[in-house]
Amino acid sequence: MVEYIRTGDFLGKLRLLSTTNHDSITLFHHTPQLIVPLLQTFEASSQLNQFTQHSYSCSVCLTLLHGSKCLQLNCEHIFCRSCLEDFWKLRIKEGDVARVGCPDPECVKKATEASEEEVAKIVTEAELVRWRWLREKRAYEKDPTVVYCPIAGCQTPVPKPQDVDANSDIGWNRLRQCSRCKFNFCALCKRTWHGPLESCPLNPPEDSGKERFFAQNHSKMSASKMLKLRRAEKASLQYLQFATTSCPGCHCYVEKTAGCNHMVCFKCSQHFCFRCGIAIPDKSYDHFSTLCFKLDANGQRIANDKSWNGHGFPQ
Image (tube, rainbow, N blue to C red; front, side):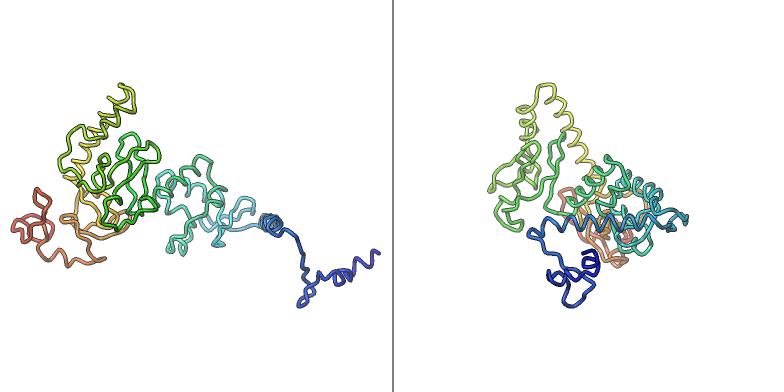
């Protein structure tokens, strides 16, 4: 009986041997969806055990370390956990989530990011939560239809409703409802929802809906505090309109402290003119050899402005 099992002749009688390769065995299971995860877990565990039995040179610190102190990323590059921990934790702390990935030069050029499984093996739970939040925030910032709740104490990102066409001429595409505070507002003017047919108010009164919302949903003390935040928010918006230019690519506010008017957005890398806000080609200065458009007090562009010499500086 032992010899019969050792030779494996019974596998052929049970039709478990492959017809093309007798070194492989075909296993039948009545519920393959249950056994597949088990086989995948076993395969990963076997690869990890084999990895920890060898030593590897970290591509950052060039130190030869045991496999238990190293991590092989999905791109197959190997680094010590200490170097990855220092690098990834600093990037997460500074909010630079796009650089939480493989530090190999080739992968840096490709902007290869680490998976959640890889990040979880290096950072703490709190840092992992922040990493997830930063990735979600970045995804919202890349979506032009996402706006932030205008309630000063909320600021939750609100995406466009799935059943509304963003290119529709009907005013319903401007309606947004915050999932956190349930405030209904217009995505264009950031005021309380005024209906699909009514235009956005040009000069809304001080009590413009958000203030009423505060008073109706908070205590008197809380409402007073929120109103102060609302006034501070209004002052911030006035400063942004006066001292910044909106990026034509991602619409984030950009402030210039020095240098010429050729700007490169730090978020989307869009090249644009700080003076007029027009997008310009990459590494092109043709726009600055002609007269730039200037905005008047009403937000209208004025061409052929004689007070500007076309090089980013007044005459």
